Length: 148
Figure 1: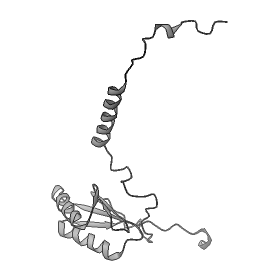
Figure 2: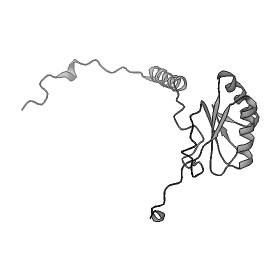
Figure 3: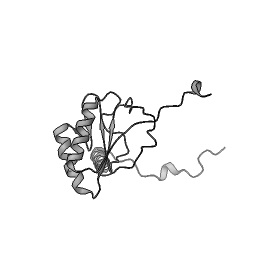
Figure 4: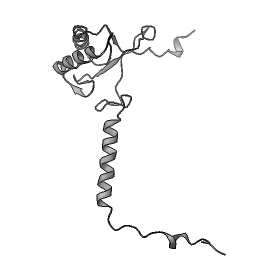
């Protein structure tokens, strides 16, 4: 019984002895690719999987599309194009508001963020020139036991 009829292994070139330089070039190109073509739809660094916006009846009815968005954690961390504090956020908001004709902002505040912090961010966005500021919320899940 013939198991290797074409004997292809004998016709291949031998392996190169050193891959070190090529390995580092490939790693560098992959890193540049991810830096240049990053997506805003990928989970922002620092946002854990336990990030949950508050539930509010009628949230779907008040939904609106926005041009920009930020995420706020209960620890006070604010993620826009990176990790920002409140003074840096004000600068970022001013720059983003100048880029757009009718700028709008979505504030994705986690359920543990205080109302005072959300109000500070909203007022900073209004002062920067954002026409509409929307605070994210989810519609509460319908309780099966209460439906009759």
